[in-house]
Length: 64
Length: 197
Image 1 (spheres, each protein chain N blue to C red):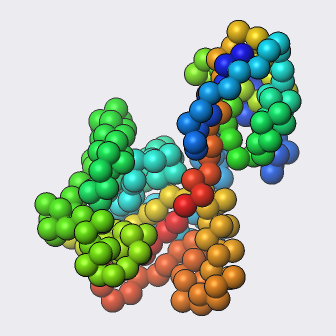
Image 2: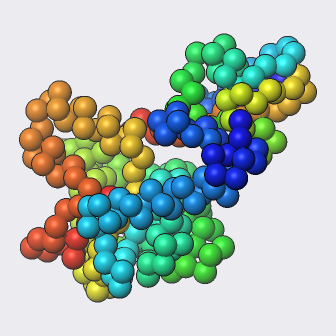
């Protein structure tokens, strides 16, 4: 799967399928600081993401 | 995960509330939480004319949307800060939001109205850009709220940012800033009805 991240903007890819929680664990991102979006739709922590999915991880805390 | 309300598929899980929601019931949850905060802190009266200061970002546009849904008479105020592409994109987001919902958006451009933008204003005043920006916005908020006869001015923030500001002010022992970081700032001299956040 291809994962788009912000702050800074970057793109990473993972092989196979993962849950949202597992993906965030691999990226060392706190679950409560981001929204995870698949094909324009929010997905919760236990959702399984497919190998072909395009994922966006959007921060919800500006930090400013 | 299933929605706590309707047991349909959830789109978001909120650990703080130990709850999951579908899109429809998440929106309702946000509106209910806002209504409760308004009541608990006596922020707004039902007939108040409200002005929401919007940056074009999600926090302020969300509070504008929610207040409208709760039945308040609410207009938006956008301040053009002259910070390059950031300001252009922010203004576009605020305008698109207002247009889509048929809402009134008041726009004040610092360069057009006062002859300076934040980068030049901060240098002239020898203040950090954040300080010049905050003071400029506050002045425009007060001026526009008074000129338009609004009863309250509202700003939208997320709790994480409020917590970060509170933590920073405690560490630096900024008592004046600590004193004003409250849900409601009452009216004062030169200040509109009240300010709710």
